Image (cartoon, rainbow, N blue to C red; front, side):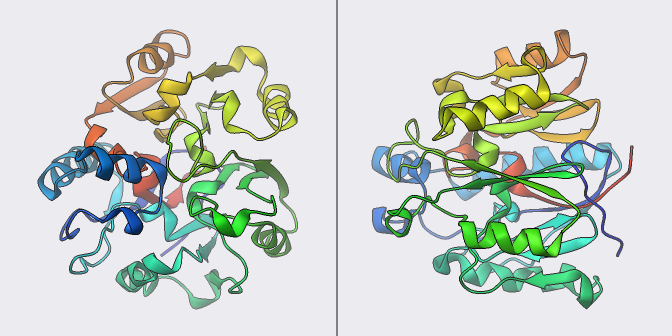
Length: 306
C-alpha cells in the first residue's frame, strides 16, 4: 500500500475509520481518559454502542460516496476503538506508531490487518519516553504543527498526551519539515477549560483557511503565530461553547469538501457561504461525548497531491 499524507485537505484516497463494535460498558470515573468522557459519565449521558454505530455508519457512507477506500481495524471485545487517530498517523510516506496512554495499548493489535499491507521500513516506532497521539499532529505541507504540554505538572494530567521528547524525535525523522510547537491548555475534568488534542482547537480547511479557538493555547504568541501565517481574514474563530462541541474537529475530503457535524450551524454556514466549501453534514453528537469527533475517528493513509 502506498502512503502519502502531506496536509489535512488534499483529496482523500484511503483512510482507516475507527470501529464502533463491542465498545464495552460505560467506563467508571477513574477509567475515563479525557474531560468530555468524565463529564458524560458524571451526567449519565455516555453514548450507547447503538448510537455510535449509527453515527459512524453515516460517516462511512459519506467516505464511500466520495470514492474513498475505507479500512477498518479488527474488532476487539469490550474495547473502545472509535478514535483511530490516536493509534497512529502518516506524515508523507511514513507511519508513526503512537505511544498512546497505557490503558489503550491493546487497541494497537487491531491494526495489524492494515500494517501488514505496508512496507516495514515505512513504519516507525517511537521510544517509550516519546509520548504522542495523532490528534496533536496537524500537517500543512512542509509545516508540521504539534500540540504540546511542557509544564512541570505534565505527568499529573491524563489529557497531556504529547511531550517535548516526541516533538524532537519527530523532527529527527523528518529533517526537511518545519516543526512548530503549540502549547495547549489542559484540564482533566472540565471540557470547557482544557484542550485534549491540537485538532480540538485548530484545524486547516480549504487551501489556506483555518478554524481556531484562541483560548485553547497556553500562550498568546502561539495563537498569534497562526494568525500571522493564515491571515485574520482566513480564520474562523470559534467560541468556547463551539470548542466544547468540537467545531474544529472537522475532516476534509478535499480542498473543497469538508465533513462536519450537522449541528455546527454557524461554522457550516460560514464554510459554505464565505469560503465556498461543500459541507457534508453527518450526525456525530453522541460520539463527541467521548472526547473526539470526525477527525479523531480517522487515520488517513493516502491523499492526492492536489
